[in-house]
Amino acid sequence: MSSQTVIITGASRGLGAAAARILAELGARVVLNARSEGDLNTVAGSIRAAGGQAIAVAGDISQPAVSRALVETALSQFGGLDAIVNNAGVIEPIAPVAEADADAWQRNLTINVIAPVLLTQAAIPALRERQGRVINVSSGAAIRPKGGWAAYGASKAALNLFNATLALEEPRLTAIALRPGVIDTEMQAVIRREGQGRMSEAEYERFARYHAQGQLNPPELPGRALAVLALYAPPDWNGAFMAWDDERVAALVAQHAGM
Image (cartoon, rainbow, N blue to C red; front, side, top):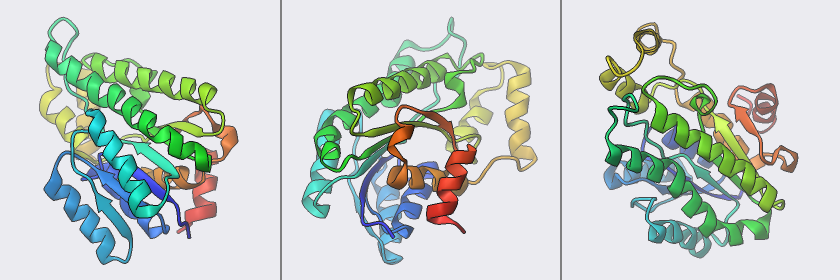
C-alpha cells in the first residue's frame, strides 16, 4: 500500500473519478479538483466512506490561484506531494477549422494546455523534494488528426510536447503522457451528440458504433493504469508517451495493483 499524496484534476466523474478511487484503494491520499463542487464532494465522500483519505478543492484549474490552492492543500493537510495527474480536459469545439468558434478554441487550449502548465509550475518545487511524477492525460488524437477535432488534437499534441520538454528540464521528476483509449465517459457522449455533420461521416459512425456495440472501455480500466503510473512510474520512462494498455504499463499494473 502506498502512503503517497496525489493531486488529480477533472476528478468529479469519468476517468478522473475512477483513478481517484483506485488511488485511494492503493493507499494514496488524494486532493481532488473539478469545477462541479457537488459532484466532486460526492467522489471525495465516497472515498472517505470506504476508508480512504480525500480532500476536494473545487475551482477552475485554469486559474493560477486554484493550482496554488491544490498544492498548498496537499502540503498543509498531507505533508507533501508525490504526483499530479493533469486529467481535466474538453473536446469541444467539434467543428471544421473554417467554422469553429474562436472562443471555444481558446477555452479548449486554456483547459487542455494552459491549466496543466499552471498546476505543474505550482507543484514542481514540492515534487522535486520527492522525485515525484507528473502524469498528463493525452490522446491518440495528438498524433492522428481527425476532421472536426483540430482544437482537441492540437491541444493534446501541445501537451505531449510540454511533457517531453518537462522531462528534459526536470530530470529528477518523471513526466509521462498517457493515452487512455476510448472510454465510456461524457466526452464520448459529446462526440455522439455534436459530431454528426461536423466530423467525417465514417469517423462519426465509428464512434457511434463503439457505443452501440458496447466497445467503450469502462473508465476503471485505464483509470487503474493512470493510478499506478502516478504512484510507481519508473524514472527511466521520463518523457514517454504511452498507451494505457502498453505491455510495460500492464506489467507495472500487475505488479502493484493486480486484480
